Amino acid sequence: MERPPLGPAGIVVDLAAVRANARLLRATAGVPLIAVVKADGYGHGMVECARAAREGGAEWLATATVEEALALRAAGVEGPLLCWLNGPDSDLAAAADAGIDLTAHSVADLDAMAAAFASRTAPARVQLKVDTGLSRNGAPRAHWAEVFARARVGEEAGTWRITGIWSHFACADEPAHPANDRQEQAFRDALALADEHGLRPGLRHLANSAAAILRPSSRFDAVRCGIAVYGLDPAPGQDTGIGLVPAMTVTAPLLSVKDLAPGDAVSYGQRWVAEQPTTVGLVPVGYGEGIPRNASRPGAPDEAATVGIDGKRRPIRGTVCMDQVVVDLGGDRPAVGSEVVVLGPPSAGGPTAQDWAEACGTINYEIVTRIGGRMSRNYVDSEADGADA
Image 1 (cartoon, rainbow, N blue to C red):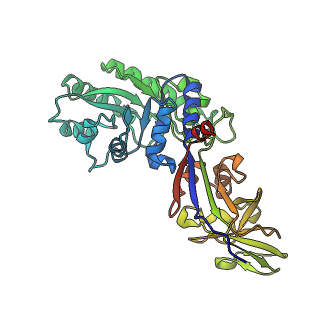
Image 2 (image 1 turned 135 degrees about the horizontal axis):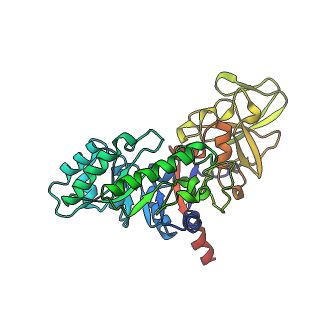
Image 3 (image 1 turned 30 degrees about the horizontal axis):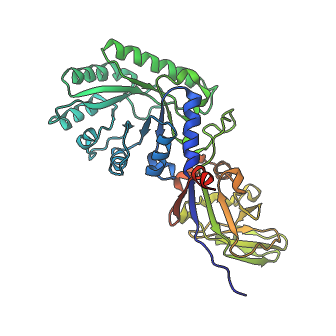
């Protein structure tokens, strides 16, 4: 019997979903949207998703690093753009020349920027980040006054213009957590102190995806959304149902089907043993493609991650390998070459990124951001495709 042709495992990103999610978030918040496209667009493709988010109404884009922001500019992505991680080798002058808003977290940051901007004739664009309780980056409360004073000196000298002041929630996905009230009040305190120092930032932003949906009081002048732009729930278990659509689908071909007898063991370490006759299938994705190695849940196989084949959910059995996983077909014999839905929106017929996150004890952010490896990434536009039909 001739073996059917097998396509490679791959990622498909629907740019129409990114565009629609941006529209929803913009409409829900009622203030400008900053679409975060760091980490290669959370695994979805930074440049392509940046353009789609802009088309969906995102007035701003944001990256973590200067290098990511410069890559967007090199790809021809224009418009307001913020970044916030400045390494010792970051080209601050190039970023300023490209009209990128840089973020300062300390007086030392501002001093470094002043040195980098020494030859500029026009003010650079700088935003200030304050730490309101995440204890990550951002100026701590004890240093706010000196940061604001240094920022004002730079404004008066024409070195930069302070275009924004911002911070980041630690617990926005838990709306009742008392830290949210404390952080929002701290942010308001920081804004008041900045005003006392003569700073008039045009953009005050605190809300991330979860807060943009769940905490209207934190929206200020803009909301800064990352995971929700890609259609994933920023606060599982909370009422975030505004109609977001997951943009990513990951598929692979079914490479083989074989019979197992009771007592047959599967994969490295033989951590799963068939208790009754069954069939298993081989799927060519593994931790080399970003599949979490604990997805099979060797200690709790009933809670293992699943894939979708022929409309049924098939659990992973045995240790996840670098290049492949084995799934339990329960006695069924799908055709070799059948499409395996590794993850995607509910309409794809397989698990969602959130399903994978729950099986692996992590968050949906990690699932989609780590997916890739040897898989190709392709783009569709279901809005455009539908219009042509």
